[in-house]
Image (cartoon, rainbow, N blue to C red; front, side):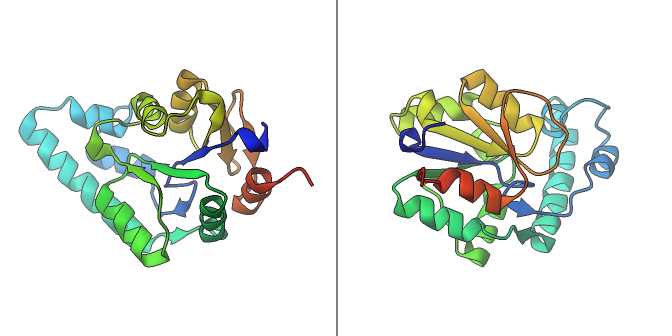
Length: 193
């Protein structure tokens, strides 16, 4: 990973930059999501009335978790330094724009682009990554995706962009792992000194 080549960092939100108290097992049970299926893909296939009810339930769960959550230490400083260096900062999340705006206002953070599920380019698909590359006139080697789950790894792999996993998750694949945001910052901001 050549530092000078990086022109854009795509960040996942929940679990990567922001800790929210999601109990995904309980949420899937509440919504009736079968084992091994993603919440959004399951709800999307439901009949309209049922889909509307389940989406309303999911939105309420997400909003409550957002209000109880906390930005990870070092995120504000990392985003600010990337901005100073002219590196595009993109947020790609399956969360809602309303929750992203709440977090951004509360913690005084911003991004050059925000892509939420309302735009119809949800992870683990890679449509959002191709959109980002096109909008900023980038090639795959100039972009790094930073996330914490298989839903982040899959679009990065499909798009052939570098991936960094933040946290202690036991995931397999071709990516770098860092313990926390402090270690991520050292990696992204290292000028080779």
